[in-house]
Amino acid sequence: MPPSKPVGIDLGTTFSAIAYLDETGKPVTIPNREGELTTPSAILFEEDNIVVGREAIRAALTDPGKVVQFIKREVGTPRYRYRVGQKNYTPEELSAMILKKLKQDAERKIGPIEDAVITVPAYFDDTRRKATQDAGRIAGLNVLDIINEPTAAALAYGMGKLGNDEVALVYDLGGGTFDVTLVQISGRKIQMRATDGDVRLGGKEWDDRILNYVAEKFMEETGENPRDDAQSHNELAERVEEAKRALSERRKVRIPCSHAGRRLSVELTKDEFEHLTEDLLGRTEMTTQLVLEQSGLSWDAVNRVLLVGGSTRMPMVRSMLELITGKEPDASLPADEVVAWGAAIHAGIRSLRKPGGARGFTAKVIKELKDVVEINVNSHSLGIAAFDPKTKKRVNAIIIKKNTPLPHSAKRLFKTPPADGKAAALRIRVLEGESKDPDACIQIGECLVKLPADLAGGSPIQISFSYDESGRIGVHALDMTRGREAKTEIIRDTGMSNSQIDKATADLSQAELE
Image (cartoon, rainbow, N blue to C red):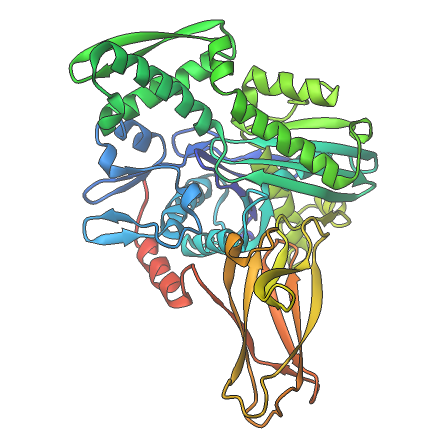
């Protein structure tokens, strides 16, 4: 049996895609069973079937209560559950259904799939990254790595530029998230310089502005609110998305709205649309300027501005970027596929590092990939909750600053409780975020260092906090008195346990997704 091919997966808010490297090393998007290069990230729960993709989108117009969408926005949310009958599904389980659909459809084209790299927004915190890895595991994938979406896009672009020296800004505006990353290509090294973003800013926000505009006009005319009925709302949302795409080419459109037996057609001009959403565009502009500032570079040092994500097709985006950068944005790679392409390239690179990982690759591909160096940065500062003797308050003591090249670790020395204390462990709150206030940061969980019963009070314990290459957090502790590793674990506030993941994996393995 030929070796399985590693794949790259863009697990998107609105659409997802899967790609692999062909025998020449070129990334290729694998179409789904319906022949589409991208699969809508929507799930329909019928009585005996789970349907992922285009049919789920259609069903949302008639049976909205049976369809779940925009799951990516809930990844890492501890209390989110989607209830179907007597069963509650976590975001990890729902994401796994989309991943399994991509996997099983791709296997019809290229054979068995085991290894995968899955992309995440650059601004995803550790909780969301773990949840994405867990979703891949539930879907039956061996997740080689998690890679940032702009990093993947830059990799897809940069592979053709290796050997050159170039700085590119990747502006990634998708259906539900926004990231901007500054990338430096030097020889065969692709290094991220700075990144920032917003996990709740994407094309959906632009859609919602149009939808609310039309709904308000409808209410003025009829006294009825189409947003109050799920079916009317979803029908209007579909018309709104069509109108938004049309406004990329036309000066004005008419948007039909039906609800409670009444119909209305509302005109919307391109100028009105841009006015309705200028603050959204402004938020992306502010983030873009912030990333440039954090990198320490000027626009003169940036050679290229790369467009990634379907929402970058809006003319207002391109006009804004050209105005602030002085450069015409580069849309030479397909906005909906380039992230999956980069993930496939990264999957190939990671595969070659495994024992026997070169099987299935030609000598040409091995030569192309083996010397590529990727350096990522962390999107959030890593800190701990510490006591400030001056203010007598707990503060976020940052240990690893945002935009530090990865992997990276930092050490801190702690003392065990006094000899007369009863504590059997050191407990340290682990945080991600920039605020000095621990409560304003993302609490990853509690680092628990178990102490030997005979260790004297006040003994030094060295704790190493780290980010790995994929932005995941690790903690290690050393008993300085004896020079031995101390037992350490992060007790996370959110996420699925190993036993829960195993059960979800077994349950989904029995399902054939349509």
